[in-house]
Image (tube, rainbow, N blue to C red; front, side, top):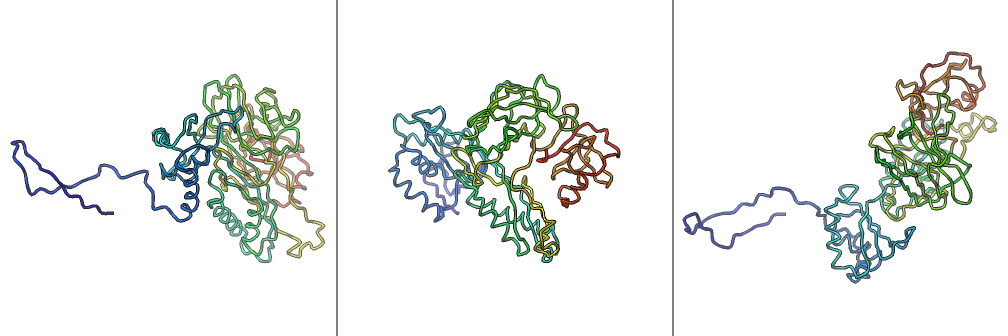
Length: 453
């Protein structure tokens, strides 16, 4: 936009003489910021009735959701809720979480600006407070069955499935406060990617990232605000590895069901054969109904993942996941797994179905999330991949040439593949598990695996 400025006034020089015939040029030192394009029709339809109903005064949480975008237009999504909804309740407060269009968090300066502008609308007795959003991630494990008679390249088909999920992940139903992950829609989207896809068996998990405060004794509360599914007495909650003061080696935590809707967190390590060693049986608590994990006072000194992050995953009671309060919902396609499986019945290779083994619709028996590192060492040489995740640990070789996890064979041993996406026929896995394990073992003492432990 071009603005034509004209100077009105007089200019005098150092001799107090009036200068004439001068022209002024304005050179901005920095570009404009915090502005926005003209409001689109969809936004007008959404906010206009809400702003009108607020009558330009902020009393209810809905009023704040309508007024804040009008005083600060650079907001992509907003959520406001009363303190009475918290446990324990905090009456007289309204909490506001907002995601700006050009980032994930509002700066402290912007927060102060918004709160200052809200003074013109707030009523006595209600104190607004702006809090940072918290990301709630949804991840998939999808086994996609296809008719090989109509598929030229399986990897291209897998890429098409991932691309379809990426488009859905960037849609308007997600990526917002109050967003809802609709399970049935995802299943139908996968089936519609290609006529060669006959079905899919897809399980979901939810994840929160805990950013640890290193070398400081701290307590942590991680809220998912979605009821947890508890299908066994323990290992429903899983974490990536981290380090704490007073304990040598990598540790993890999981849950142990107690009674009702509650359970305890326990801290443990894994040895070279992935056997469990309990470090503490009172590491924290979990409320399955509320979807809440509380970690008691602990001094975390480091994390296996970068940026001081500990990933915590759970299985939701409902496959439809909802982002409540300050939770901002995102579908994490990059951390989802997509396995392509031939449908031998549809192809005609096994019309009787006698050799057809469908994938389980329930989560696996993993004990930890992400890389597994033993209590005596750290990751060094990559051996291969287990369930698509890097594996660095001890292994043994079966008589048929398959490499398996662990220095010796056991029921928990798993097949190691050379690439993350190598497909394994169920019959070959069964054969490898029943074969003699008389071959050499690795001297490596660390291990790493994803969701397969």
